[in-house]
Length: 111
Image (cartoon, rainbow, N blue to C red):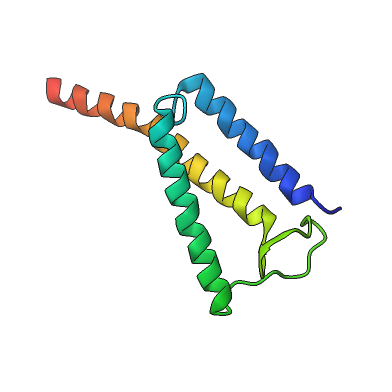
């Protein structure tokens, strides 16, 4: 079924947005900074992907799950959404772990 992978990525991204909004982890904490981090992260990985394709390391294998839309040769549309999900998940995780580590360090200092 074409587009199923893209649908899964969009559902996952929606989950990241809900977590971010609920706990103010990334975009809801500092929107301008988050936007800059996201743009730089996705751009870095897109350049990485294009370089990998040019070197023959990355390629699209046969699959029925992709939409068929290509951003560049051997770079499907789904790759962009995967990179958004990768960066968003990483930054939400960073936002969630930071206060936990800060509390642990504060407790250690008070002892």
